[in-house]
Amino acid sequence: MGIEIKVDDRFRERENGAPDQGLRPHPERWKSENWDAEWGESVESVRKRNMEALMDWMPNIVEIVFNGKEAVEINELAHVAV
Image 1 (cartoon, rainbow, N blue to C red):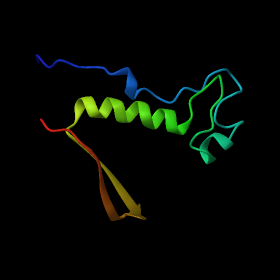
Image 2 (cartoon, rainbow, N blue to C red):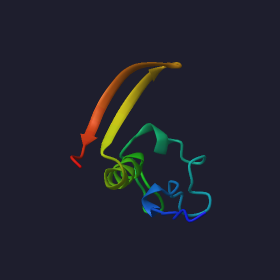
Image 3 (cartoon, rainbow, N blue to C red):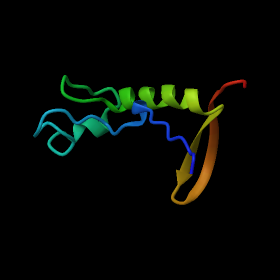
Image 4 (cartoon, one colour):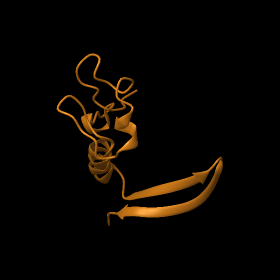
């Protein structure tokens, strides 16, 4: 079809690290955005990695806040002049 597929590793899944050190044995990883360990990524480090990748791909990045299925707030987080 002639369509080029571009892969950006910054959009990869969150790194769990060593066996038995993932998300289920350590639910505190979800409770604190900055919780980090040698064997995995914090929520904040994943957010930062994803935002940096999005800045390269999209001119506008927005956050949409939901209450159930209803969008109650839309915030522009970044805008890149093209």
